[in-house]
Length: 115
Image (tube, rainbow, N blue to C red):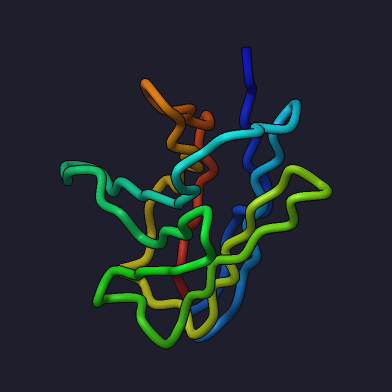
């Protein structure tokens, strides 16, 4: 009933920046958290960043100091600002919204960091 659509992925050189956006088709009135996950070929999906409904955040150790998660409730959108990108950041990035009884997932957006 709720669709999440990611955008902003692409090809970027090491050291560059990208800003990912995830827009929900409608307001999610009650949620536990919003987050970004990523999955590289041959690897498990991992949590990149998460923001709880109260505003607290957590990040994977590998992205601390480089990535920042934020949200705009009025626009039903969550963002991931990615700076100082490294080749190991290459993956498909997925938006996630945790709700009571389950979660919503986006289709994913490809981020490739390469020179």
